[in-house]
Image 1: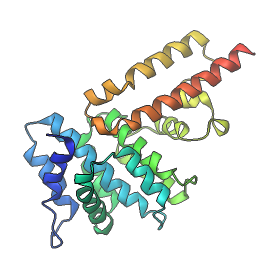
Image 2: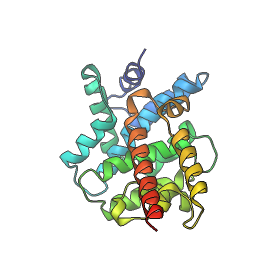
Image 3: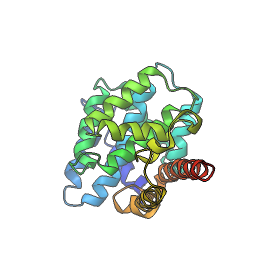
Image 4: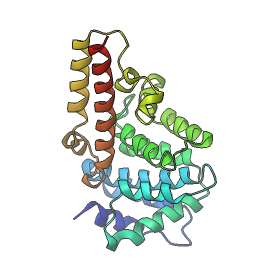
Length: 239
């Protein structure tokens, strides 16, 4: 059964009269898959991305077509499940619960409990991809993302590395993108770069619970890492 079939089972539990909206889906994921941690992480990741994307879309008061397109770049939704995803997205936007509630619940469902949890970073990367889709990172979106990172227990220095990955490299420090100090010997930079590439390989992300359908997040991250490394390499070569 695909991740979308699993997700559809839970979205079907939502009704217009549901007292807790998407929270009912969150609780269902937690209880039904209590003995299946891998499936729980995959379904919970999907719910987190859809619910938090919907909440973020309301952050600046305008849902642009670019943001919708970016959402579906991450979520290659099969046509037969498009209605389910749209329904969950709609309920998350209309739900009176704030985004902090969802972020806290998802941190418990998806997270490892450790600082800078990689799966929670995957969710944050997906949200950045959507937020920047219209070419502008609105201040309210930036505040939204920073608050989510705090709830996810992403350290500030690590959060700034994530931010740097999503900026134009002409406007940011490639060393920050790699999360390494400027002035390190090139051999140290290369070792660090290779470690980053290995740890962010799509197979590694799938192994830690990222659904196969959402590997666009991984490829975007690797592209930013590669571009930063190439910029550093060129700079040192011509120094």
